Structures are given as C-alpha cells and as structure tokens.
Image (cartoon, rainbow, N blue to C red; front, side):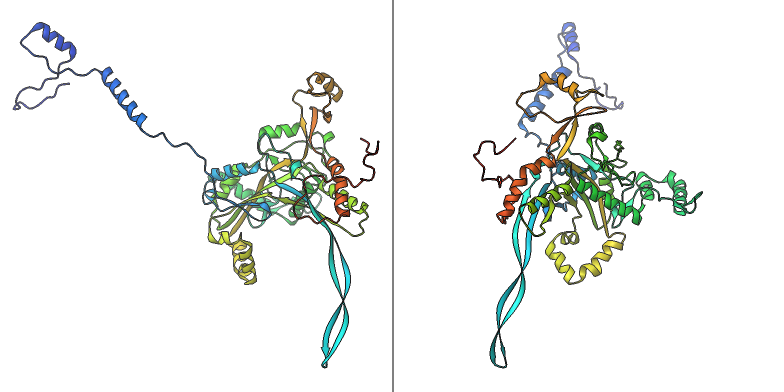
Amino acid sequence: MHILGNSDTKGDYKPLPTEDDQDQTASGSSERQAGPLLPRFEDHATDELATSGELTSNQDPPPEFTTYEPTYFTGGQGHVISHDHHLNEDGEALYRFLLSQANIPPQLFLHCRGDHTEWRNREVVRFENGKRVVAMESYTETVVDFDFTIDVSSYIMPNPNGPLIWSVSDHEAAYRGKMIREVDNKPHTQQTNEDEHVDVETALVQHTLDTVRPTMGIVERWRHRRRRATKKEREQSAWSRNAHHKWGIPPWQSIVGQEHGLQSSIESDHLREQHQLTSDPSLRRMIVRDEVEIPRPNKTLREWADEYCASNKMLKEFVFEKKVYGWNLESLQNSVIQAIHSSHYQHQPKVSWNMVGSEISVMPDTRLARMLTRKWLMFFLWITLIYPLFIWPFKRFHSRGGGEWRVAGSAFAMSTWVHKADSTPGETVEQYSERTASTKSSANARPPLLRATASGVCEHQGTREGEWFAEWEDTIMNLVMNRTQAVEPIRHPCGSVRTAGIGLDGYYRD
C-alpha cells in the first residue's frame, strides 16, 4: 500500500521492499542497499501462538462450575423450609431445588399408646374455725400403660429412575396462588329442568375468553379459566385425598366414588408409561376403578414454579408434598388394634400414623414471613391478638397479602408392581417362568411374585402390609404386655411372645 501526500512534501514515500524484491535488487544492482525485510505471516502467527501459550500456561485455571445451593432449615415435623431470596425470583432455581429434595423419601412412623383413668383417694388437711380437719378427697389420674413408636421408613422404596413428580388435576380443588381452593376449568352447568341447562357464569366466561383471547398471554389465559371451587368440589377433593392416603392408592389412580377427572397426573413420560403398563385391573384393589388411563399434566412443575416467582404477594408460599402409596394404612391400623386387644388389653388403644419430612415449603425472604415460621413468635402474635386482627385479614383479603401453591409433589412406593420388559402381551406366568428359568440366579432364592396382565407379566416389588404385620405382630404384643414406654422409635422386631416352646422340635412351622 502506498501513502499519498501533497506535492510540497519532501521526498517520496515508498513501500518497504519484500524479500522477493530484495533478491531482485541484489541481482540487478550492487550499488543499491536492501531495506528491512517484512516478516512473513507464518512467522508472525507462530510467534503469537507461542507467546499466547506462554501467557496461558502462567495464568491460573478458571474456577470450576458450581451449582447454586439455596439456604434452608428443618422445621416442625421434619418439613424443609426455605426463605432463600433467589428461589422466590428465579423459576429455574426453584424447580431445581424442588427436584433435589423430591427424591428424598419421607419417614413413616406407627405410634401406639394405651392409657386409662383411675380414681384415687388422698387425705386433705384444712383448718375450719381454728381446728385442724382431715378429710378424704377423690381425684382422677391418667395412667400410661404403654407408649412406643415403630419406624416403618425402611420399607419405603427409593425411586431409582429419579423423582416421580405428580401434579394436581384441573378439576381438583387445590390452592393455586390464593388463600382459597380453586379449579382450572369452567363451572359446572346447573340443570333447571329435564330438557335445558342454563349457566350464565359459563356463558360470561366464554364470552370474555372469546373477546380477549387474541391479546392475552398464556398465564393470563390460564387465570381466566381459574375460578373458586364450589362447596361440592371442595368436599369431593378432600374426600379423595383422604381416601388415597388411608387406602394406599397412588394419586394418579381413580377410585370408586371419586368424580371423574380428579386423579393426578405423572409428569415424566417414561414413568407414566411404566405405571400405565401396571395399571391393569387384576393388579389393583377392588376400590380402584377400571379406568387405566393416566392423564398428562396440563401444567408442569416448572410452569408452577414460574407462576409462583412471578407473583408479587408478600406472604406467598409454595408447598411441595411427598406421598407414600402401596399399603392400606387403614386396614393395617385396625389389624394392629386387634393385635393389642389379643394381648388381653382391656382399654381402647390409640394407634396413628405419623409422617415426618413430607413437605417442602418455600416462602419470601421478608421479616414478616420469617416471623410466621417461628412457633414462639406465632404464639406471641396470637396472645397479643396481632395475628387474628391484623396479619390474618391482610393475608386473606389483600391483593398483595398471602397466597399458597399446593399443586405438585413426589410419590414413593411401599408395595408396587413392575412390568417385566422381557415379557410379551398375553403371556401367562407359567409360560414366562419356563422361558426365563435358565436365567435365574439361584434355585434357593425366594421365587418372585408374578401376575399376568394384558400387557405382559408383572413382578411385585417391595413388602406388602400383610407381610409386615406377620413380622411385627408378636413384637407389638410383646411390647404391650411388657408395658413398654420407649422414647426412641423401634426399628427392628424384638422377638416373639411365644417363648415357652422355644427349643421344642416342630414348635415353629414354616
């Protein structure tokens, strides 16, 4: 490139000669001296790479990538509580935090207590008119006969394929961001006579959606579908949740007496397909409906997390629930009560199930929200009437007051059926056992419990409630007759009460 100047400049600016020009000049004329040679591009690039390599080797390596770890603590009943500021603003961070806690199973305990009331007499000394009078007084006293807790947590099976996330149905009355339970569908029509249905509310909602649908976003459309649950819907949803818990039915299965569409959905496609294969009527209890279709979630956990973070409520709360299924807890509780009575206990025992660590709560990082999670502060606010007169009305009625999201959770099995991938549809248990007999590991191993379904053969995994009761029945009777009062939970059977015949040939029969 030549640099052009004005005519009055001194001398002419000439380009520096290259290596080829220098060779030609040296061969043509010896009087003219060669100028400085321009470096070649290859040499310049090599020098830069060498220099940059030296600098890079002398620098410290970049820090390793670390995931965000929010702060949380364990509150009453083992529930996880977090006031982390980032979890209330970033939906992705909240979603990841819930996933990290979702695969930790809760703890299940069986509490047994027996007590009775006795009348006692005691001497009471008092003075009347300056004289000492001794009188007999009767009073009642509660006598504890036994009080112990059995830890059943070891019978809860972990999820090897990751957390099994479920979401509530659109028709279930649940807390979806307010202090009242709502549903995400249109109101039911009210029948006025046999030939026509009139529902003004539905018509108004539909007209509003048709008018504003082209200009509204996804979240706004969803909120227009959301409405307050009716009394019948609230009662039906409460009955369904209670029945699923005490009968050990998974939340995604519909039971007899439940309204259609109230069963929850499974978020993972892979897990939903697995449970779809084991939802055959022959594998389920009589209280479960013949419907086998597991619905897909209309709103995923990530979308619920985004909706929570987008809310500007000051006392909002996201509650993630953990549930166990597979055992009929009500029938097992009645069997334990009968075992206690069979040990010649004459009074009425108290037997209950306690779940520890079954909830994950995320709340804002504000001073008021932190105060409401402290029991002693809540007690102080109640006795001073600050909470019922000021905080509760603000939380219940103000637009920026309180709101609760209780729409999703994870599930853990105690007894379940798993579809055998190597089985074929229509195959019987005998055919499958003969075909896979050569692949069994040991002949002395306990034979698996198999059942044939329309999709193939399924194998039972876990411990059934009847097997657990057969293992613990003698222990429970022994604890009752010994009037055991234990502070720590009992995790292993303590032995049998039938000790008189130990050592006799044939006393125990397998």
